[in-house]
Length: 393
Image (cartoon, rainbow, N blue to C red):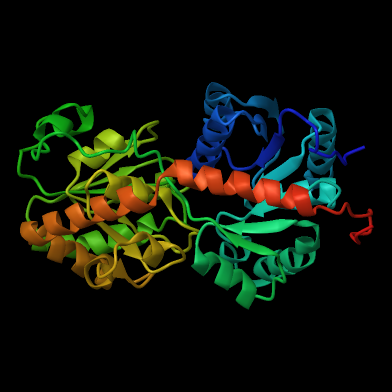
């Protein structure tokens, strides 16, 4: 039996089904697990092996199970659904929380509403593909929402995108938060000590303008657009350096012929030292839910330049749009924004201070986690189990 009541039980159990295991999704899950464990919940994480999530979730207090799932739907889906169903039965959770499109697909097929189920898209799958794939992804989301007790969006824009696409979900919006105790400003105004501590930046002159991009090297994050924009920035800001932090499927292509002044740092576990070393942080995404890296950078006191995708406007302090927000897939606009800030230290520092104050007052992950736990308890109080046909009993 999957159904289980929390009434009278001493410990609420949450089952997080997750794919992918790197990047922002993994960090969101790890932060939730840490906060939920501290609040006395029993957390279980099922995820593929090979990434950072399994280790970090275990360190945060979760019981971790291997769920061998690939990122895209395909011939392995039936086995992935069966494995997810088995792990959920064994864990006997009160709530299933499925993170991202693939886990949302497999998890909802495995549970079919018999346990309160939260689906968190972390950006919509139908925005990530084109043509027939996009149509199929949207059709599934429109159908699969019947097995979501709640669809949890990390920005109001993400919710609006789903609603306008015809997904008749029961919606909640809880914006992403970050660990403000970890992502905090460096102690001094000079970036020199932070740069000296990073081997890739050894020998860099103290006044070198430094732009940082942190994210998986993939089409979503738009580093190819950034490299085109950098061809405009480099001659306008002599000596400027761009560092791309991260790894991913586009690594070899991006590294094959970069413009002058571009460095690749590879994958890292903690971006905080890089934020302290940077003058500006940029994320040229094609789509998002609400990216974590800009929030982390702003909490460290750095201004950010973002593309106007879901969550970007909601991340920025009021009034920053004129300097910090550009249209997606527009290298000229991105290059112009970066050039303006690199050539105007006073404006850059003012934006950084305002970003720090705004983010530290609005984006505490402890508030996010508390709101998610409140959602779980609301769903448990309202839950009516569904039959295998997806109708309520």
